[in-house]
Image (tube, rainbow, N blue to C red; front, side, top):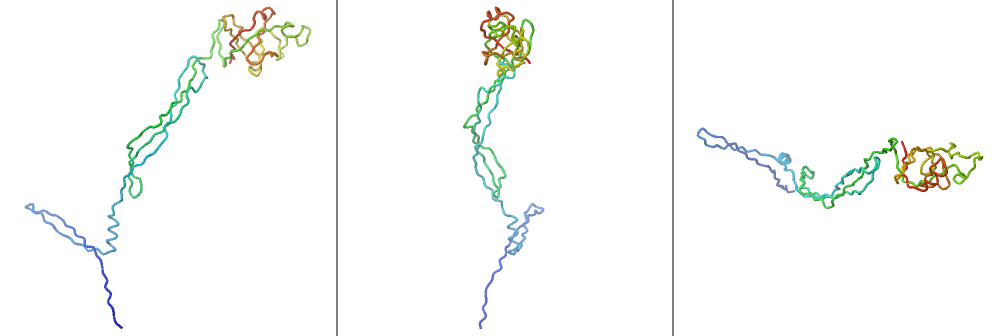
Length: 249
């Protein structure tokens, strides 16, 4: 039986370094130092001195530009009035970034360029600032709502109310009260019974004044109102008029 010899190799790493010193005359003297490192040690050292991989790249992002909300004030509209007179919409922008990655992890980001390619549109809201007060020759008052209505007048005559004085319901309103100046008939779907009102003329004639919604009528529907008068001639002379009806606080 023959003996065989198998060659094997031991790899080492030879590390050389030097130290520079200076003599009295300024001469440089290099002292060399050698170190022998075996494979296991060299792998550990190479791992420690491994340079991180740094990558630069560009990225593009699209994002929303939120629209603004602006308010305009209208002193011809009463407080509490609010209406959107222009709908708003968001815009869009494109941002270009320069990104730096180290070993696959984002470490720095710089905005290079930004472009708005869809402009946002402002939302505009109109708000009323007018005080809900009315000054009259008698007094001033505050109100919560103003209505444009068509007014007629009625009285206790049979032609007006359809009842004679001997009728047990003669002169009695739908609320059960006795009809008197300041009593008005309304459509309860528009003005609830019991509501305090002020009736103002729009043609320069005297106002009917303060009133209470206490009665109803078969012809009084929607934005119609019937004003009680003490005598038939006043009711006839009143005719049909446009009035402002203020619902009081």
